[in-house]
Image 1 (tube, helix red, strand yellow):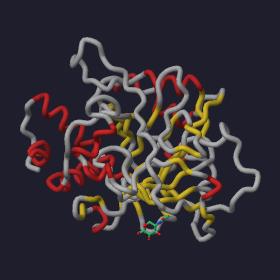
Image 2 (tube, helix red, strand yellow):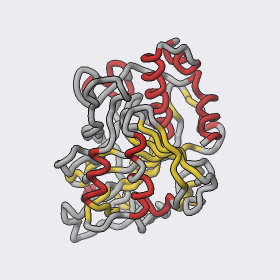
Image 3 (cartoon, rainbow, N blue to C red):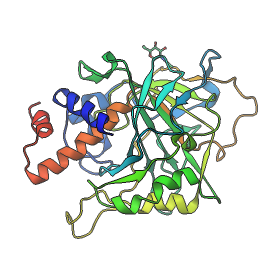
Length: 335
Ligand SMILES: *[C@@H]1O[C@H](CO)[C@@H](O)[C@H](O)[C@H]1NC(C)=O
């Protein structure tokens, strides 16, 4: 965690920061492009993947997470940034099987609202799973971590596809979900005991969809190489409800009535001729809808950007409220 923060510190002056954003309302997703032009681009995420039109590419290798079973740090930091719950990952976690070497940065969640089972961002054949868990990794070569012309260059994110709801609680997800009560309000963080991050991922890391897209939150940089695992990860209904009902998007004491953090997913974006590849042959029988999506653990070439964006977004929010003149805030307002 420490090295991640150091890295962020190094990048801070170059970071573009924009206006406050939300999913709905006057700062909602239809308006993101006003303050963040790239959100109106032609290679945006998420998308609805038409599985029958995905192009099989047998040269795509299985994704190989290294060091995920035993993260080096004894504790991991879980934060509520007002938009989602973010688990920071130590850079000792490496992701192989991508065009370049990538180091883990964070993973986070997208979900719906209590009583509504749909909250994932990526759709498979029009089907929206209950939740999505994108993991973010950054290009571990020095060049790749720099910001080039306003965009984050190549850092893939790994997205475990949407979780499917079952009867049994998923023990690995419990390592995260049981701590949500400690970060109910935006801006809160908690140190949680380290656990095997590998166990959050689906078993079959050789079956995935791959396409070039963007961060799904402002600044929407189009530098993400998405990897979407269609194999479901099953969490229990109680776990899903925990995700949907634990967090507020507002800070403690900010409002008399705290706002539940719900429906934090972006609408599907136009594909615009982008190819979607699959690492496996087309299946004649197809998937039965409803069976399809579990957690998306995607290898994004830009989830690092998301992390940076949410990190500084939250920081900026706090800074603005406190009228504090910290470096990050100054760096952002200079723009
Ligand atoms: C993504 O974009 C890169 C750079 O343009 C290209 O080389 C690669 O083939 C693209 N990958 C996919 C899955 O479209």
